[in-house]
Image 1: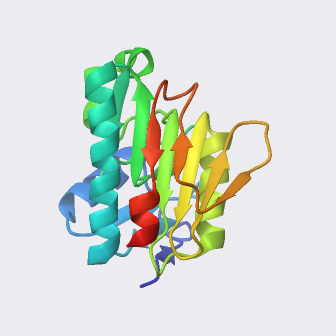
Image 2 (image 1 turned 45 degrees about the vertical axis):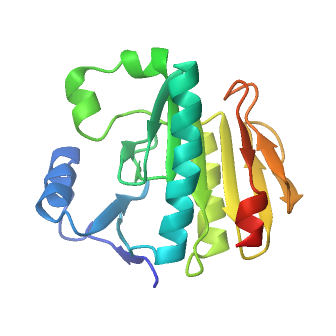
Amino acid sequence: MTAYTINLAPILKMTDEQFYKLCRANPDIKFERNAKEELLIMPPTGGETGKFNAELSADFVIWNRQTKLGVVFDSSTCFKLPNGADRSPDISWIRQDRWDRLTSKQKEKFPPICPDFILELRSPTDSLETLQAKMREYIENGAQLGWLINRHDRQVEIYHPERAVEVLQTPADVFGDPVLPGFALNLQWIWRS
């Protein structure tokens, strides 16, 4: 399935509060907004992608519970980025000190912060170019590390600020240092699936 883009600008300028209410009133639809304030309707993932997302999330949650360095978020969390976009990465992580600077109200709605770490898992219907553009957007808005896992091509693209994208072919592991201290993600199981 393809994401649909709707440009409401000719008839409506949606405020952040209106966007939040739209999302709450339609909980079965995953919305995002890009920096041009276009509304994006994101299709649900299939079973295989959902399974992989859950497995990957578990690794981050276990690491984070042990280190207590920050907060892990799943794909249902929407963040208000500095450029105005509202994005929901598959997995994200924010350092505890940055998270603690937000107010309770900011934490409850769509947090106005770009995560320190972003992971996107390409599903069979995702456009690689669209995901690569989202990864660049995260980095441009403050993310310190991003991983784009492309099961179809057996690649991981690694994004850092002010560095060229590093592409790894069928890596056994990827490492999060220094952003995710001591974190290693084993990917051998994902390539075998």
